[in-house]
Every structure is written in structure tokens, then in C-alpha cells.
Length: 387
Ligand SMILES: *Cc1c(COP(=O)(O)O)cnc(C)c1O
Image (tube, rainbow, N blue to C red; front, side, top):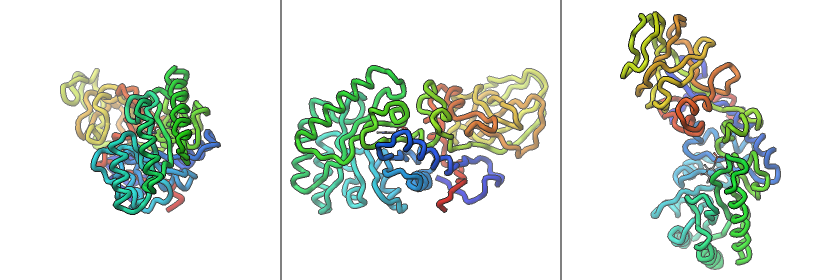
């Protein structure tokens, strides 16, 4: 991740401005949505493209009690950067850095017997109890332990607990369709989760936290909050389900503003093909603006011909194909000078498009739009009271 200390007004080719005040406010808003639960800020994938360490610090400052990542490497990076407190990581593969994780005081997830074996061996070698969350597959059909296999996993974990090798700190699961309120799988998963938790507790598990809620469940399903909620996309001010509500409806504000400086503005005659494949042809004499970001920066090529950009107060549309490093907008005869700011997306209150608009243009979800913004785009942090 490129970080820059330059102010947001510095003439960069492109920049992703990260509003840490908005992030802190989002964390506070989410805590208010789940007052009975502790909040885990999910900062995997470089905080959904926003920068893991800076965002993690801001989230903790706003009251996030836990941090969550997918991979152990991501969690170890946070710890090495000095993030205190509870950090959980869940995406393990055989031979993973169990011992490093235990020694760094991370909480780890176990979905199956191979992982239980590796974590207990690492704990024995380290001479430190591992903190383990047993993950139940309550219906997502992805990670997690199937109900039929749960008794073996629970028994093995409780034996290792009795042997002093680990503590079962969590029982947890993940929703398949929490972003579709009323989907029948939601109630079915909740029922199964309660059953699997109750089974483990009858066998003697005493978890500190039981958790299943992601952002959509945190915002729309209070009965899913349990002891802890794991919010990712909402921390970054993006609505997990635009059909259910806008960010503002949930008291959230988008954190990232992606903009670029026009590299060139020029007159072109009518009938002029634009960009690879000439999929756009100027309908008449016009002006073209060159926006110096492309799919290598994470701008989805699927938004060719449809992605929106605010230039000089007007929405423009990507003209023709998005290339690796640049794309063109038809400025309709306007002549803003080179260097004029082109805003691809932001909170929307300056009239700019949002990440959700780009998601619709590219046929994807806003999660993907912000997460894929590449390392060549410097993140510029603003409103960092903590620094
Ligand atoms: C990514 C992730 C989350 C956060 O999901 P959001 O919808 O972004 O809130 C929570 N839990 C797990 C297991 C995840 O992988």
C-alpha cells in the first residue's frame, strides 16, 4: 500500500482520499445499532482497500473492541504495527503460521480436525494456550464445520482445553443471505447456530463470544447480534444491501473518495473512434478528457462505456473501453484545463457518483469496487485526529 503524507490538494495523478472521521463515525453508528454486542471492525484485504493499519487504529479509537482479518498474515501485520487488543483471523490453510499467531496473541478460527491438530501442536510447542473460535457451518456452505462433524470437533477442542493447550474463546458462524432480509435461510441459520452453540455449551464450552452477524445482519437483524458483531463494509460507509437502504439511511458515510487529475483535454472531430476497439465514436465535434486511471488501478473494465465521473460539476460517462492505465470521457465541448479533478466516486454529497454507482455500472457490488483499488493509487488520509 502506498501511503502519502501529501495534503489531498497536492497534484497527484490519482488518489483515494480516506476520511478517517467518517470511519470513526461509522463505527460509532454501528455500535449504536448493536448496543448489546462488542464490535469487531473487519479490516481484511487492506481494510477493503482503505489501508488496514490506519483504518484499524481509527476503528479502535472509535470503540471497536476487536479487529478481524481473513488471513493470519493480515492479523500479524496489524499486531506488528502495534495494534493492541483482540485480533481474530479465520482463513487458515495447512501449515499456516499457527505458532506465530499464538505468540502474537491472536484469536484463531478452527473449522475442522486438521486445524485443531495444527493449533494444538503449535500451542504445545509455544508453551502458550491458543485462543480458538470454533466455526460452525450453519448453512453458508463455505467454511465452518458441518453439524454432523460438530460433536467430534467440539470434543477434540474441549480435550485440548482440558490439556491446557487452548481456550475455546468463541463459537461462530457466517450468514449466506443476510443482505436479503426475510430470506428463509436467515431464520434457518439462526436456529442451527443456536443448536450448535447449545450443544457445545452442554459439552462444557464456555465461550467468551458467540457471533454470526456481518454488516447486513448488524443493521437489520438484532436477534443475530449475540455477543459480538463483525462489521466490514459498513465501517467503510457502504450499504451492504442497497435495496434495503442507502448508507445515510443507516447513519453511515462513505469513507473513500477516488479522484484523478485530467491528463489531457483536447478537441476532437465528430466520427472519431475513442480508445481500444473504437467502441465509442464521437457523435459530433466535442472535447475529450483523459482520466489517468485504468484497470491496473482497479477500475473495472466491465464499466467501459458506463462508469460515471464528475468533471467540472457534470456527470460524464466513460467513453469506450477502460484501458490498463487510463480512460476517456466525452466532455461535450467543455474545456476544463488539464489537471482538473475528475471524481470517480465518493460520499455523493458534492454531486459525485458513489462506489454503488460504479458497482451498478460494472455489474458487481460496491464491496468489490473499493477493495480492488490498486496499490498504485496513493491513499491520502484526512481527519486523522489520532495522529
Ligand atoms: C468479510 C467478513 C465479514 C464482514 O462482512 P461485511 O458484509 O463486509 O460486514 C464478517 N465475517 C466474515 C467471516 C467475513 O469473511
